[in-house]
Length: 286
Ligand SMILES: [Zn+2]
Image (cartoon, rainbow, N blue to C red; front, side, top):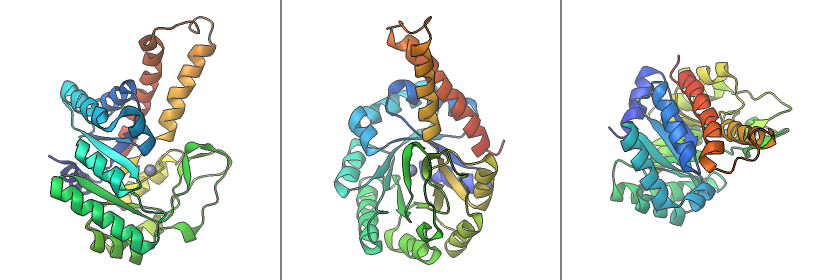
């Protein structure tokens, strides 16, 4: 089965497939082990443009292939928020399973042209590559911030989303309805489920994707899945968990002089695995 088949099954079963980012092999293995142990049917792993530069496109493809084979579990590699045709093409040529052609900062017409170009190229190489487009301005970055102004004016507009899907032929659609990238410490993050339902009502066909799940309440995530979200990006909290464990080890006198990488990276990766299990259970409706 390919990614789009898994997403279709998720829609029928009212659950969501998790998407987690990685930049190192230990985190990748922790993510896959966590998703598998929690009983997910598959997992999506992503590299942002920066993470892909760090890992290497071919290296990411080879790593994911080896881990999937070793763990006997379906893992799909996604180019997360790639912003130019050249970058998307490079990921497709390297063997990525999935692409997010992120033209959300472009004007509508340019965003459509970009997503369409990437979709046509991807499908010409391999029809099973799953392509995601994005419409609406998703604020923030994958970090901990104090406050971000979220205005309904930034939300994806239902008519525009439907038009975008028809014109581009994308498989998945990232939409904005109160979600942001990253975590904010001084405000409550809240999804506008009614708004999302209006988007789905206009075109129920694509797989709708929620970005920026870190910082959201479990209840909001459940409602979003119930309303039609089938794929959820969860990243910032994973980074924080990994970072905090490393910080703890390096500040504890009994472990701070440890120089063997797998001895200090192992416990940090274990934190990632635990969090992936918790979130996968939530996405699976458990
Ligand atoms: Zn994202």
